[in-house]
Picture (cartoon, rainbow, N blue to C red):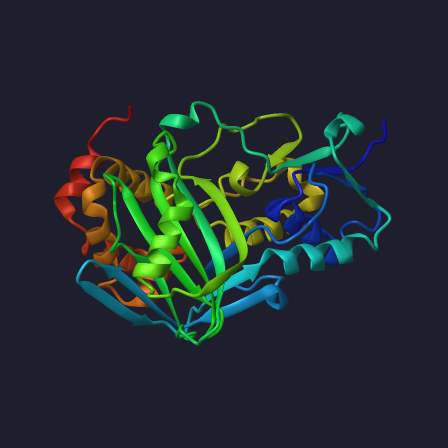
Length: 358
């Protein structure tokens, strides 16, 4: 079996981001890399969005950005603006094309469908495939989105609807999310924060059809693109194999309270690239422990008091948008953290803080 210096398990967002980071900084001139990915072809299958709080390698894959956004709950709407940190969305089709065009030029990089085709014994492995045990009783952010196109101009393309809680909650947390790409094209998504065991929440197509027709008041449209997914709001089982680093969701790069992962992946990739010569001995890269602590309490509140969450999310944006965005993007300082915490229902969070883990 062929041997390699480096092996990336999983050629999705995390695996390809790392490979690209290594390649553009000439770390693979004299090293060999195998990328193990079972998919037969790369095509648009995801939409990655985030607040742009740091630079990354994929500016030319940004489909659109916005500085205005709104948050809704029944009878209330907040309109907010943040010019410092625009909200961006990446087209995964452009992302895959850009990276594969670059990687295919290096003869030291090879793609394989299965790890059974290569030797893992002497390579350093970067694993992006998470392992989940007993996942049914855990919280997930699960969703389905459709990109719709209308004959008439119906969207305000300058503002996104980040969260619309004016919908059926079904004893859980449910909201819709709308990204207008133009006056007649938008991604509309139905999103749940709940356990995956409740099949009654998975009639995504009916939810979307009803929302587009009765909330957005759009009767005549066509669907150009569909995506569906689930983000774990818990950390996967950590593989502790020798000479292996976990990356992406497998490496704890998903912020549990938000599901945001893309920029964390990019920063982790930069860290690995800068330390690639001594990576086996390097300190583990992870999201700041204060966010893990705060997210743990937040998710307890979410799980035990779902009926209060629309109000809590809405109240979060009583702060300055810059403070909220920095907090959600792992960039906040202590004063900004406190400004967020003091706007939350304190006794509810304090009660969950002192509960024992199950």
